[in-house]
Image (cartoon, rainbow, N blue to C red):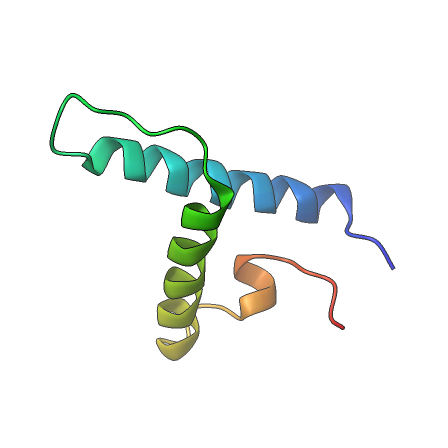
Length: 67
C-alpha cells in the first residue's frame, strides 16, 4: 500500500506549515533549519488536539499507512 499524491501533498502541507509557524514564533533574530524531529513532535501534539476536539481523524490530519 502506498500513499496517494493527495495524501503526500497533505503531509507536505502540514509539515511546511508547522515549520513556517516555528520560524515565525522564534522571538529573536535566530533561525532554525528544517528539523523533521521537531516538526514531528509539534505535529503529534496538534493531531492529538484536533482528534480530541473531534475536528478530524489522525488520518485526515496527517495521512499515513497503518501498520
